[in-house]
Amino acid sequence: MLSAGGRESGGSRAPAGRWRLVRHARPVSAPRLLLAILAGLASAAAAAADVGSFLDRHWARPLPAQGKSPASFSALEASLDPSACGSCHRDQLEDWKSSLHSRAMGPGVLGQLLDMKAQAREEHQECLRCHAPLAEQAASLVQAIKQRGGAGLHEQGLVCAGCHVRGHARYGPPRRDGSSPKPGEKLPHAGWQANEAFADSRFCAACHQFEADGFALNGKLLENTYEEWRASRYAREGRTCQSCHMPDRRHLWRGIHDPETVRAGVTIEVQAPTVKTGRLVAGLRLANTGTGHFFPTYVTPRVEMEIFQVDAASKLLKGTRVVRALVRQVAPDLSREIADTRLAPDAIAMLDYERTANPKAVYLVYRVRVEPDAFYAAFYREMLKRGETRAGRKMIEQALVAANASRYVLMERREPLRSKTRAGP
Image (cartoon, rainbow, N blue to C red; front, side):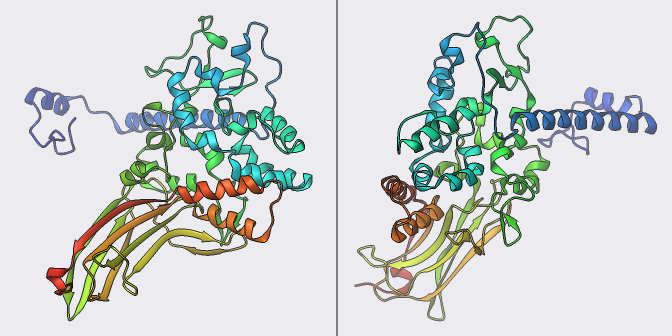
């Protein structure tokens, strides 16, 4: 492909014949060129409007019940259970099982619902519209609450049908080659209706973006991931949510809970320790180089950059630790925003270190820690401490254990100090 300077993107001169074709092509008149541009823009706008119209219908809440399945459907085709979908879509089912979508109605949500009064449960339907969006899930959930427990479709969270089935009709993207089912084509469950919306970031915004008049703190919507992306260069470059979170169409939705996904989204650099006027000087730099929204997004995760000195037994030496948190910190009852220190796309966080070297110090440790469920852990602890949960107490305790277990070290590096400080035995 030729650049503006007539060279290929690799820097070598383009073949002469090809260059002459470009040079001697008949020039397009300005009016014709303008008309062509306007026609292209109009076509793109129409396609975008079509996607928007489809999504308005597809995500109209609450989702209506599927109703009676077509007479031609087998019991397997009529089922909304993910295992039924997986009888043919095996890879997608296995990916989904490993994802947080399959655990969207985990013990933290169910434990709270068990303790809610009927009126409060109705007020919290805004949460369920994404965690278990199907009308059939709402029905099984109501039954489980009445019985103070019980299995049902609601327990499986955001199931396949939550995105792909409406009125027993199947919806999805076109095939990889761009084709769609033809009328009369013999396919299971009468095929599917193809729509480009499944590759559009607005599809994800249905759950990962609050409406403009939605719940906000300090003038900022609580859930604002789609708008963070839309304001970034990733939106301008056409890099959608799906391109990172559903690579090669896989149903993984990896995010802050997955270390490898997070490592791919940030760049971390270490400034080696030096001694200046008797003080130990170092630094840690973290840049949001590959995340198409704030890092981290939403209010639940907490990322900590830290530098500290340790002794020969790797024990933290008191008074040597400095830390910088990247978090949108809010009160457990969501009454106020305490701080917002997250990184916008392409922004950089610096942690400067200057401390007296402890005589026992052997290493200077640089570390980046991630707590994907920091808010939930604090929230569950507060619930248990105040005795706000009874019927759901065991579930909240399970949720707290899971939230604490989600923590991990994203990066750790140790730099020896003996040669620099002459410390040690």
